[in-house]
Image 1 (cartoon, rainbow, N blue to C red):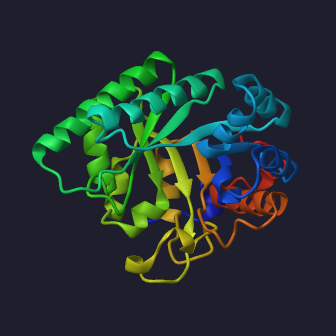
Image 2 (spheres, rainbow, N blue to C red):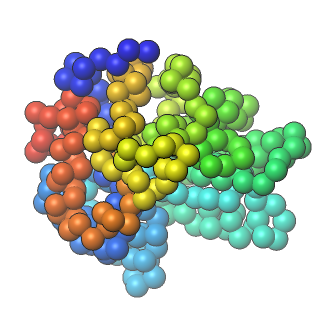
Length: 290
């Protein structure tokens, strides 16, 4: 696949910044500072939302988001569902139901679900995962929320795009699609040709980052840097997004402790500028990109 020059990519996606990029700050500060830096959409880290709920109510969180003028394109993330079983699994389901209600109440369209099965697996386990995802998608669909399965390069399954697509296809529920985290795509066994499996129908969310110049085997979250500034250029993915006329969210996601102390106003502005440039939306620097 040949990537087009950035300026020639007519990508109508919604540019966003993940609030996890400013993990050490409170949500009110993040939203206000990101908005001041012309970042008007976020991928909401659920830990931030739940800290607000601990001190207030769902209404206080709703008012905070509304007053900020910042749109939430996705919430990240729900773990533990693929292998949730028995009494221990019920805790994951309870938390999932709570988070679905939260997303529904806040009109958050997409909830990212982690592909976090790390133990040795059998064919029976894979079928159980599909059944759990089908159950989760059914619950989400009833509330008007979409689930975006994110494969993890470190997991036993799914750890690549092809397997994640196959699992989503096996479930076959309209409320279940994919979240493609470029870091996991590049650090795992996914291949560039696998990007051809993405479509406007199955891709619900995208998370972008680049990686410092280290071997793939040694790259961790702490090596995540701004997209377009390292050794893992997202241009092949961007070309595919243009091909399928993708219009969902594309968020910068950097879980890098070295960047957490950067003031949110500064980080949000720099991250959004870099992202809009990659999406071919540089001339929309003070707008929503839509």
